Image (cartoon, rainbow, N blue to C red):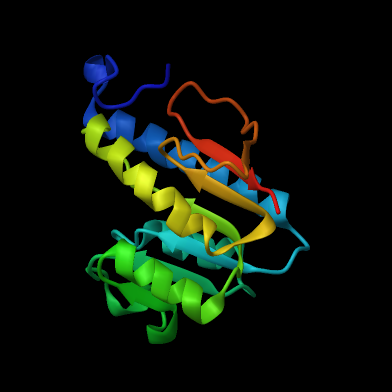
Length: 173
C-alpha cells in the first residue's frame, strides 16, 4: 500500500510524503504524455489549486489547449489560465457547461482531488467521473490520485511506485 495520509504513513514527515506525492504525480504525467503523444485533443486539469500541475502541463503539452476547473482562483497571474479556458465554480455546474461548449474534446484528464477524508473522496469520485467522461475523447487517458469508475473506462497499468498511489484509465468509445 502506498504511503498516504491515514495509511500508516505517520512515521514519515509531511515534507517526505509531499515529495513522494509530487514525484509520483510528475512521473504519472510524464507517462501520460507518452501515452497520448501524436493524438489530438485538449487536456483537462480538474483542480487548479496552487497552479503547480497546470504549469507542468503547459510544459508537457505546449501546443495543446488546457481546460482548467476549480472552485476559485488563488494563483499568481502568471499561473492563471486564459479566461476562455478557465471554469470557476462548482464542478457540477462548470464541467457540464464546458461539455456543452466543447463537446468531447479531451485526450487527457488529470484530477488530483484527494484529501484525508476517504469517505468524502469516494462521494466526490462518484459524481466527478461522469462529468470528466462527458469531456473525454475515445482513446483518451484519465489520471487521478483517487479511484474513479466509469463503465467505458479500462484501468491502465501505470509504472508501479510504492511511495504513492496514482490511477490511470483508457476511455473507450
